[in-house]
Image 1 (cartoon, rainbow, N blue to C red):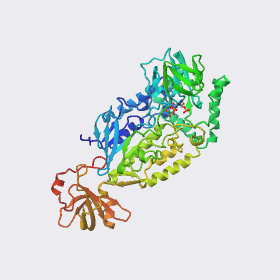
Image 2: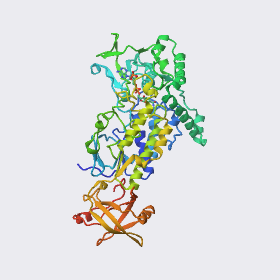
Image 3: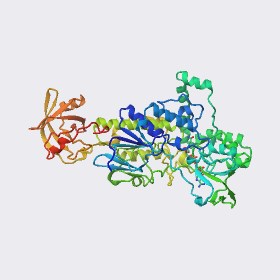
Image 4: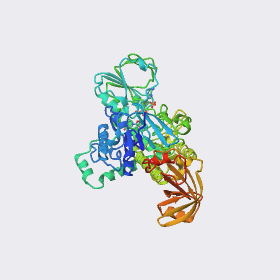
Length: 603
Ligand code: NAP
């Protein structure tokens, strides 16, 4: 089977992150990309989570791309269909539809070290061969079932909250909900309305802040459309309110004020002291993700609803037995038990340099540089990778910072005329020492709870240890020193020619000394040669002025060449594609090969 070599960049996932990367690439002129999406619809988490009441707990005006504001939000906190609709409109507006391949699930990624390309294979048997991979599968997309014995035994209906079965009507049924996290608090009030009996199984109580949600009035919506700057003003206000919270996440004692707001809601909404006690967490607010809801506590107090805190012993054929020995019968069980986060790559086949698998690279835990690059996996970028999530800010903000950074990486590759970018292992190590040092005192690590931010060893592999502004600052300008920039050709040790040559720019000529090598096998259909010109002020000046040059070796024809960069020793790196300036045995074959463009656009 031959690989599809047309796309230079493969983006995996058509959710907020993948789409943002695509838009930023297109804006920067990198049109050679495909988006592979396993489902038949875009939207990522906003396509998959369709449970009743599914909405965003970040205010709508902040939950959109900064470059594509939405004038149509109908609520303070948008609901899932509206967010999905927003993403569909973005795709239309940016003409991304033609780049997306739906129903295309990637099953493996393998790096080809000789060509600096990835073999990307799909479940449908297709194969791609891009220079760059951007994996944007979303950190919360692998539903996690609870480790409770007997799940297979249950004869009633059961499904995970992220795989809601809308063909099943819960009205009039006896329904169990296992889990009381961000998803459950949104759909429990809906199920409570018409279930015959609803039992909510809580293992650990969560802190719940009020949700000031309401429909936006017609006047507000009109104002957002027509008053210049109003939408942006709201967005800034929401942004900075969320941003201020990071102080509390990093210095947990500052969380007391927030905890007081949550306790206030609990006091106001729950009169029964026993229930209130059962709903009061014993850890610092923020340690688990803070929930936002104003209708969860009232729903729990309906006549047909009960909170079960006894702990689940097992699932039986007809229901759930708790540790106190009592058994309840149910028609349906909904697992609101969250997602695999820290081990979400456990089953992925990602093979980097020297056969290194992602599991081997992460045997001591997930680790990346600034959430996007992993040493040993060149030309591979992760969106929302380890330690780039936030507990306090719209994730869309982090996504935009990452997409912009990846575009800078690709630009640098083009400017340097290289085919490989790889984060330096030492840089990644140092970065992660800093990350985990900062997280050590954070509320996620010290708040006294267990959460999906922490992996099995208790290390926090999810949260960014600072404000989103601090992340944005780091991502705003790429520091090339953090990466190694090489070409497949550069790594060839043999020299094909060392000696005198003539370099010409326009009518000027310079005698120089060159050391040249070449790839005898064509890369991407073109013969590549490369090398250096010995330190020479005039050549350096030509490089700085970006002069077009021709290189001639004694007794040979002149060839077009490119002065790539000045190296730390003052030599000027030179390269070319096509007929080499020095003799090679297989010249006839080389003459037949085709010369193509840039490394990212297909050199
Ligand atoms: P979650 O926050 O991880 O909550 C999972 C729940 O299942 C917890 O209450 C957990 O209890 C419980 N659980 C797990 N295993 C259990 C077991 N064996 N027995 C009993 N209970 C068990 O999952 P989620 O609610 O799906 O939310 C996941 C994340 O998705 C959120 O944190 C948030 O980042 C995101 N989300 C966002 C929104 C939004 O509006 N933006 C909405 C929904 C979700 P313990 O606490 O004891 O572990």
